[in-house]
Image 1 (tube, rainbow, N blue to C red):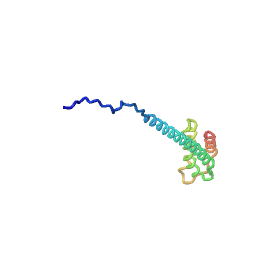
Image 2 (cartoon, one colour):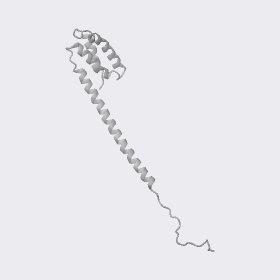
Image 3 (cartoon, one colour):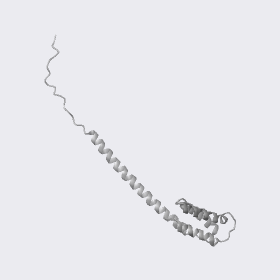
Image 4 (spheres, rainbow, N blue to C red):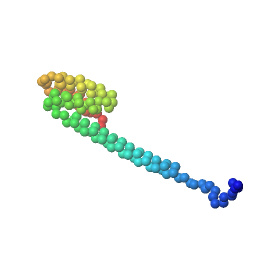
Length: 131
């Protein structure tokens, strides 16, 4: 029979292996978070710029409406004016007043030119809008 307790001298003791994979993973995640945050901020900046440009464009369209055709002008003012209606309570009330004043010009087959009182409401609405 052989002796089972033979001394083995070739095997080295366990050595601690430094594992840096968690730090690599963490640095990659931080880098990805920075890239995503940069992209989100850039997208928000573009969206805000686009929104600001859209408001300017809509205000210019609202100011440049041809009032010689009262029926078309009434529809156009109502359509474009709705864009600014929900800015604040004051613009909402002014739009509602203007909208009510423009109704007689929309639904009749032939309409008279827009009266001065309605034009005054239109000019007041243009002054109230903040861009």
